[in-house]
Every structure is written in structure tokens, then in C-alpha cells.
Image 1 (cartoon, helix red, strand yellow):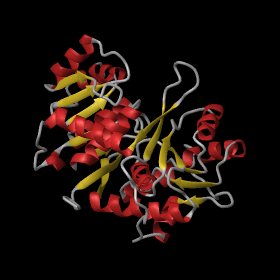
Image 2: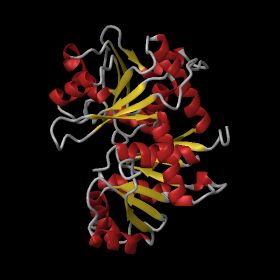
Image 3: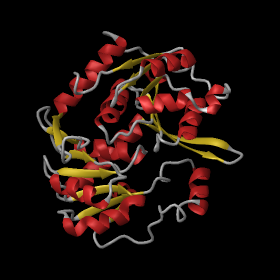
Length: 341
């Protein structure tokens, strides 16, 4: 309502000769698309409190799906898309999901484990869908089949996300969502045994977003919050990426430059060069990899747009912190996530 025409999401790809090409999605578009998906999910039989598994990395479809499920009164159960079949089956079974929204790269895996789960319907998206036209075309010609993204036909009852959004264009969820309703089943890493679902309400997610906002800004959000660019590299299927990047950025009306694979350091650096992020949430290994990358050492990547970073998931070595702050001129801190808050 405050800034419908402001950019919410940036989807991009690096192309030979042409460099990094990008497309954007506004807040109004994100609201409209997630509303359409919510209406569709309700028609598919989703009831308040039902879980929907999301199996995809940081792409625009993840964000649409995340808020679409919540608008429908559902509970997001985001899983690590790189899980092997047994771990994926366990988590989808554990959360009782009957609907899965997945990227086409993982569709074959979901179909393989479907007989071992309660899954009745799979909604499929392709990584190329929100890329700019030239990047989409080149991906289709050169990479889609080679890298396993192409799905020629879907199983009975399964649907393409784009078909769903077209069918339900202009429709919205007609379901009241309360602050006390469950919003996510966020799975732990399984370091103390099997992975367990930590349950959080809408109120809890909003509270943590407000805590992050207060920590960074104090009482007042700047009127130009859309000038803030979050580097969306940390996986949004983890609590850290979901709260400290996705909900926080959307909560203040900032932009998110989506990075599907944070382990692809050259791609991360290219995103930094192109979109000049101001806020960057990451893990110590990522900051260390940036510190020691040849492009950074040779001065071919400028980190000086970054003014604040939060490191999580593992202890931050002082030497990593000091070197990143020297290179960027920004501040790199440890904390504050859902656990601490």
C-alpha cells in the first residue's frame, strides 16, 4: 500500500558478452501474484494450518509461494532442495504436506518419493520464469535440458505455477489469518539427531522482523527504504535467510537481489558489482570466501556499497570480520536471529 511501484525482487543472470541482465518485480506484482496463488491453494483444498512444502532456492517463485501459502492460511515448510531422497521424504512426511511447490530441477526427486509421502499435488516452477527475456531464451537453448531443468510433461494432477497464476489472475485469498496462527515449520539442521520442525506463528515472525528493524534503524524507517538493497544470497529455506533477509527486507519495503546459489562465489561477486547491495546477511564461510577471492584482491569487485552485515549459523572468526570490514568499509556483526531474539 505504501510503495506499490517500488522494486521488491531482482532476478538476474550473467550472460556472455552482455554481462548481468536483470528483471524486476514490484511490490504490487508480488502482492498480486501471491494473492492469486493463495486463492488457487484454497481451491485445491488447503485448509487453515495445512502445511505446504517449498523445494527451491532463492528465486522469485519462492517468495511468491512463501507469501501465497501464508495468505491462504497455510504453513510454510521450506526444505533444503539439495537433500537426498530419504531426507526429503522424511521432512515432507513429518510436516504432513499434501501440496509441494518445487523447482523443475527437483521435480523428478519429488515424484520419486511421492508414493512414500502424503503428497497429492505438485506445483512446478522453472528457474527461468522471472529472468529477463534474453536470459530466459539463452537458458532455454543452452542450459535447461543440459542441467536437468527441463520437464517435458507433468504427472497426473500436477500443474505448472505459471498456469495456476494465469488461471487465478486477479483473485485473492478470502481467508482470515490471525497473528496466533502458525506460519512456518522451520526445520533444524539435525545436528542432535533427526531434523525437527520448530513452529513459529505469524506474530513471532513479525516480532523478529520488528526487532531487526529496531536494531538497524532505531525508531524510524527512512523514507527512502527502497534504496536499501539486500543481497539475497543466504538460503531462504533456512530461518536466517527467511527472517533476516526475506521478511526483514519486505517488511521495510527494500529490494532483494536474489542469488540462487551462494556457493557460486563469482556469481555472488557479480551481483555485488551490479546491484551495489547495502545490507548483506551471510555465514562466515561466505565472508571468508569473498575476502580471499582473486577478483576482490585485485580490486575488480568493489564492496564499498555494503554498510552493514550480519553473520550467523557458525562462529565468526575475528580475522574474517576485520578483513571484510577493511575491504568494504562496512560493519560486520554476529547475531541477531530468531534464536537470540
